[in-house]
Amino acid sequence: MPAQAQNGAVKVVLGRRYHFSASHRLHSAVFSEEENSRVYGKCNNPHGHGHNYVLEVLISGAVDPATGMIANLADLDGFVERAVLEPLDHRSLNEEVAAFRDTVPTTENLCIEIFERLKSFPKAKLESVRVQETSNNSFEYAGNADHLEESKGPSR
Ligand code: NI
Image (cartoon, rainbow, N blue to C red; front, side):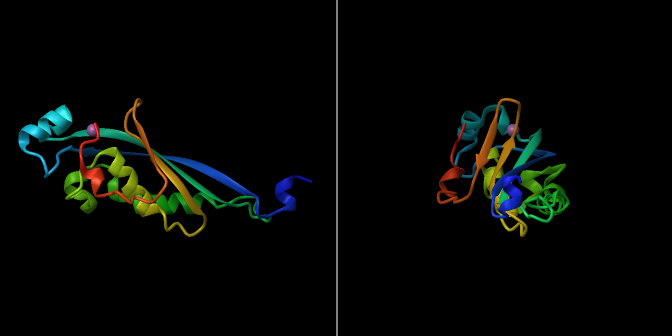
């Protein structure tokens, strides 16, 4: 008999990938125009630029002996759609997402914001979120943004 059928408390981590596109401008209110240009380079372009973000959501939970699953993917998809994709896809993060009105929409901060939006998923525990900004950059966050205020500073 397989282990998961003997013990419903076996913990499994599930990863699910989503895609969204958004624009941003990296610009910090704590810097002068010159400093912003120096810190963020072309990412400080006043008209912004876009990314095709890849979001990976990891959740964990016990395998339900009846379904053989830790959560129904349809429940996760619906939650991510309402909490993240609908509000962020094809948006200007700076102009249309309140969280980035005063916080620089780096992918570090985007990762934290998405985690905060998903951590109340009722069917399983949110382990972490990973946001891939380009094929070379990705960021992961697993909670406890104790130093969120400091993260407003330059990061690249
Ligand atoms: Ni960018």
